[in-house]
Image 1 (cartoon, helix red, strand yellow):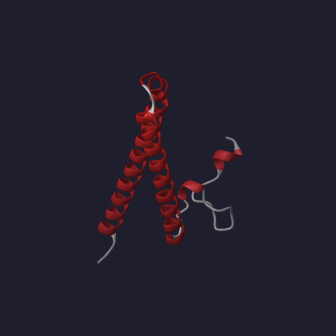
Image 2 (tube, helix red, strand yellow; image 1 turned 45 degrees about the vertical axis):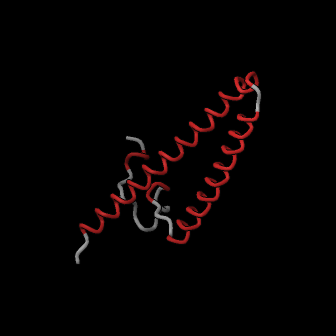
Image 3 (tube, one colour; image 1 turned 90 degrees about the vertical axis):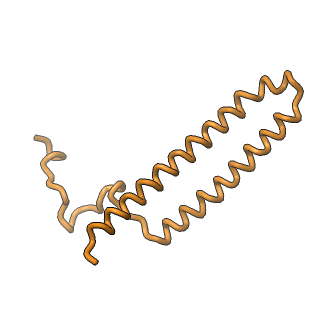
Length: 104
């Protein structure tokens, strides 16, 4: 066996920090991350709104060339919202499970 597989998990206290996927962010870091995501989402909605106004103002021929870009932007936003909703649901499930298993 190679040395990478021979190391037991969890590592001893003197070893390197846990892998990033096991790192739990602090509440302050979470709030900062949420605020940044809200600001970015607001900016993206404003951009989508601007794209729609431009599309409505364009003539029929220009609309045909703009529609693919507008549709792609909307689909990307839907994917971001779906990812955010799934992450929130997972966090709620983890919180509920932790609350259910903790002593009163």
